[in-house]
Image (cartoon, rainbow, N blue to C red; front, side):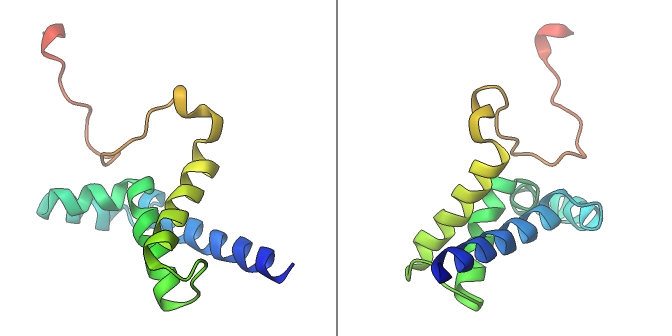
Length: 111
């Protein structure tokens, strides 16, 4: 039972960090600034699936490892984010990899 409680707490910490950094209005100016300065890093800060990997790695390294392997913990963090966020809807909603504050790319066939 203790392992289940630790897993749930660990998962909530990873999800909380990921959602706060990638989706909250508090971090929107930081995401925008980083994206304009360093586009690849800015995309990482705006992609929940990408950031949850690094969030899981950080939580496992600094606080509590779940599997005893940092890479597996990082993958676990990303998998938890994917499952909670997308679950069965994966076929209907593709993963968003870009910052939400940018306009969609122009489609040359519509011009």
